[in-house]
Image 1 (cartoon, one colour):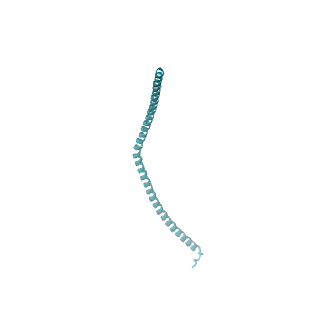
Image 2: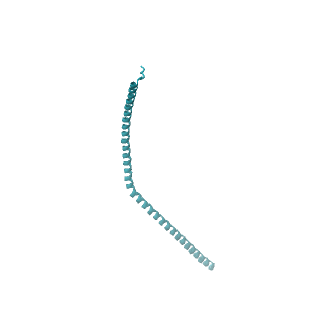
Image 3: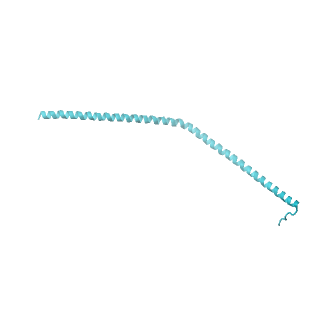
Length: 124
């Protein structure tokens, strides 16, 4: 059935008034829906913030536990480097001493050989 178009001013006003009431109901429903969605989003957002803060708190606690261990490791590493460099210096010193001993042995052998050679020449 086709609706009849309002012909009089009064009918037109009633029609417009009806449209406005319908629009107001629709807007009110949309407002209620948006308000509910906003509340849900706010609750979810609050939950996300609490979760993030909790995780950050855990990480801060872990960092507090790790920091002394890291400092100790750093100290140990530094100490190890000092030991390594000390041993390296000692090895260098030992190498020089070994070379000196080799030279002494070579000189000693040459002296013994020259003494033996002189004896051999004197006693043919």
